[in-house]
Length: 141
Image (cartoon, rainbow, N blue to C red; front, side, top):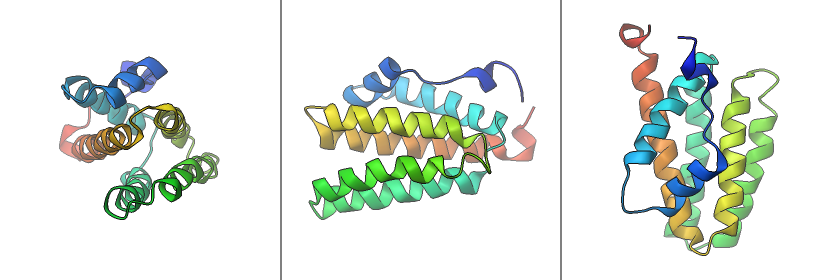
């Protein structure tokens, strides 16, 4: 599975559209599919992607259900160095690091931070789902 999928990286503008546009999920789904394929092409395993998503769900719980916005934002920002520490062992994590870092910056700078974070969590949920789907041997190229 090398080729165009391996080269895909969502840019800042694409991530901004995903985080700010709550009306249509089309771009979110399309980008998540491409990102999942790119992570697979870079040999990032399901558990590595899932670990990041699990932390995002914990952050979501803090923010949405417990109302701890500042704690949640700090945890989101701290997720970046946690992923960075994995890059040496799993070079494919560098792409995930970039997506989380750019998204965290966009969320922090958003006028509607909570909504942007919820969309980010939805995006990462779609990435995990597609990664799982495409990682199954019968779907690999």
